[in-house]
Length: 332
Image (cartoon, rainbow, N blue to C red):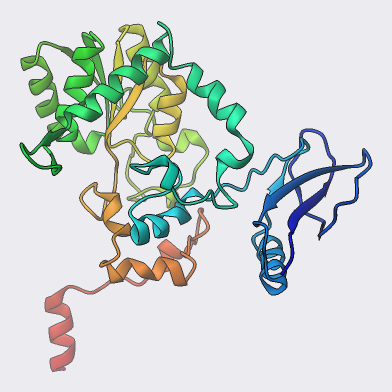
């Protein structure tokens, strides 16, 4: 056993992330050609453990920026296993002194100045500071405590969270950017918001009824080729709500990508109430639950995405015959 540090050595390239070219154990100084980042493995490390760590770094292709000690291959999701095993992580523990050690991929190892600078924006009277404070207050309101016990239970739905947040922010005019397939749900939400004292304004994704073909796609790219299909227009949704001077906007079931464009062009802060998922009833997280064996296939095989355009895989897929026709064929 011996005292050791792992030094990840990468050639400097200003403004770019560079894969580690070389890893070695050394206490020798480096000239200006290199930038050095390190991970301390403790005062006593077995040699095979050290070699294994080097291999893991190479296999995971950890990246460092041109600045000293600036790892950017973040992987906080792995801490889910730490939470399940210990009921705490380095960043959340009832007693910080007893928190698990920071893993090698922890952003706080190399980026505390950035984290502290970002956190400073939540102080003062800016819009960012107010949104952060109110969101934190609403988070606390979402749970109810059991008298005489440390047990807490969730008590509010996402709709109630959103209403509470908007009230504490003193918002009045609320924009609803909705998918055309969720107009009924959007209208129900509008009735609730109006009853709570807000002024809801809704804009459908198909407003203006612009032909999808004008986007440069082909007939085969449509949901139903050979029919007229209007294109989604999220930038128009955002600009219309900007013109209405909404205080906040709510996304209701916009498509992947269209939600990005809406958020990008919205002048008001944006939150999402409904995330579109055509298979799971707009509950995309159901795919991630451990007991859902069907969707585990996504971990073992690549999802086949047909190339868009004429003659793609969607067009070639054989259509099932009606039940009556199949029965007649079997009898014959």
